[in-house]
Structures are given as C-alpha cells and as structure tokens.
Length: 480
Image (cartoon, rainbow, N blue to C red):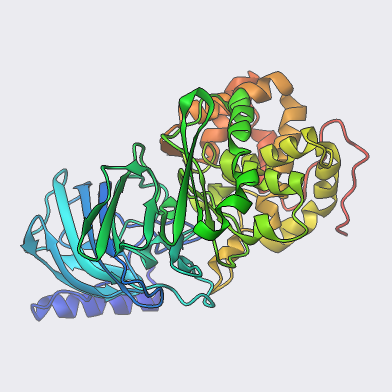
C-alpha cells in the first residue's frame, strides 16, 4: 500500500498526539456518497428524531431548538458525528450524560462520557439554535416567507436546520414540536399528535409521521396560515396550508388534488402515506419541492397572471408523484436521484398529454435532441457530475429531469407497455418506506422483462452519448 505525503503527515500527527496523551482533533466524516462525500455519518442508524423549535415571530432571528435523536450503534463509537451547520450547539448529552462536542467542517463531533458499544441503543440530545439561512446564499434549509418560515432541505441542507444524519439512506420517524406566538399557525410533515396547547402568549403544535422519512424531506411551516381540509380517494385526509389572505383565491387549484391522486393511484397503486397536501409559501423560491406529505410551492405558481391550467397542474402532479418516487422510495445515494426525477417527470408529462398539453412523444423527441448536450454538461443520468461549489441545487440539471424521463421512454419501448406498468407498481411496493439504488432498479426491470437488461441500461444510464431509442431510428441529437 502506497500512502500520499498528506496522508503520511496526518498519520504522523495523529500518532504524535496519541503519544502525548491527547486525542486526535475532531474530523468531519461521511458515508462515501460520491456527490456529497461528507454527507451522512458511519457507525449508527437513526430510528427517530424529536425536534422542538421555538419561533419568536421574527423570521431573521435564530430559533431556540432541542433535537433528540434515537439511534442504534452499528460499531463501537468513541465519537459520534452529526451533520450540523448554520446553528450553535449549546449542550449535548448521550444517554442522559453530558458529552463534549466540537464543530468540524459541517459536522458536530460528540464525545460521550464512555464509548458506545456496537449494537447499543443510544439517545443524543442537542440543545441548539436553528438559524434561518440567508435567502441569497443558495444553500437551502429555512426559507423566509412574508410572515414566517418554511423548509427546503433538498439536497444537502437539513443539517442547516437541525443536527442529523443527513443522507436519504438513513430514514427515520419524526416528531415536531413547534412553539409560536399564538396569532400564528405551525404545520409539519405527518399528522397532528393531539390538539395545539396554548400557554400565555404562545401555542405549541405537535406533529408526527406515520412512516419513516429522509431528512431532506422534512417540512415545518410557520406563519399566518389557513389549514384547509378535505377528503381524498378512499377517505384519505388531505390538508393544504396557505396564506390566510389567499385561501379563497387558491381554492380552485387546491381542489384539483383529489383528482390527481386518483389518476396516479390508478397507475401506481395506493398512495403511500397518511396524508397529503400543499404548503403554499408567500416566498420566491424558484422551485417546488416534494417534502413528505406536504409539498412546498411558491404562491406565484398559482397567482401570477399567466398561470396555465395544464402546465400548473402538471407541476402539481410532478410533486405528488414524488411521494411514491423519492419519498416513499428514497435514493440510496444521490447518484440515484435520476430514478426519482425521471418518474416524477414521466407522470407530469403523461398527465399533461392526457389533459391537453404537449404529446409525450414530442417531448421525448426534443429531449433526445438535447440529451447529448445535457450529458456533456452534467454527466449521464446515473453518474451525474457533482454540483457546483456553493450551489448544491445545481445538481438538479436537465439530465435528471427530461434526460432521465427519456430513459423510461426508451425502456417502455424496449420491454412493452404492460411490463413497464408492472415495473412501476412493483418498484413502489417492493421498496416502500426504504431506500433503493440504480442496481435495484436494473435488477427489478430485468426480472419484470424476463431477460437481462444490463447492457441496455449501461448505455442509457452511464454512456457519454445517448443510445438510439428503440423504434425511433430517425431521431437525431443536436450535439456534434
């Protein structure tokens, strides 16, 4: 084994500290995600988060917070790394005993009073602040609305709100306890756990998820909000959360969700969660986001003067489809993002075609024309280039949307509509409430088709150039 000069120096420094009786300095860790190497942490698996947030009414001021993490160690832990940045840790306990802690990069490194044995349950309690992000920094986390806050934690930003194991491979149950001035309303992912409790001038709202959730999908909204309830297919409770002043104007859009749900359930099977709805934020985000059970939309999507009914509803269907693809079945690594975005884009495009929008085939033909250029700029669908420094949202390039939906279009041509439909339904059933990889998808597609599709997927998912689409030898790329 050959060691680099840098690694040799680091090992010598660590050895020197050990000989002097000093522990090596805290270091940021990660689970080896190719796109976010310091994201997630080894040595433990989180089972539940209990997050308490106290909001003063000023959306520029840090919130006082307590995050309780229940986990099980998978290795002996002398230190426990948590992903946490953009807030201040004030105290940490491990199983009730005070622990030392120090920041290291975007990690909070915790040293318990005694090492944690492998296979042991542990509870980590962090008292901290949660600092609303500068809206101009483009890093995600809290989003400031006109009169409050919402969360936008994708792709790598939940740890800018609360300490966590911030990788979609480690899903967990969540409880949120949010205290606000009593004139405001707080909502969160999941369902209410009891009635709000008012003491003096403050009200505490508690919500709990019924299914495990990736940290990037957590949602808390605070503000002068109206909660609009209705019933979806099969009696599913629906909850939309909108600025109180805009409730009437938004209703014609909100009441479309039951139909969207019925349309997707006909193709994919039962909706995978306990509730659904839209959180409409009075903020300029530039995106919509599939936060679990409560998708985030900016108000302007629905209220700008040129709102197109089919185009806007197709965006609503896109985020709803993500509840199956991306939320219930989460990416095992961020390079598996293509699976989530391909399917959400696919059902968005299919819905639009069936409701007076552009034909799916024409959209895919245009995607084929541009696909080689997208691959050159952002990498192939399953091997994307890392996001630009300081711009994590730049991971969401055209190649993961229409460029990846094109993979599904080619797959349907390759295996036929019947097998393709079975694959979609079996994928969301087989991996419900879990994380799954590109290898898992290729394996299931091959089994569904009754033949090995590895060579087909090799070119479509990893090739620098886009293969020919089955049945469309005449389609051409614009790339030289």
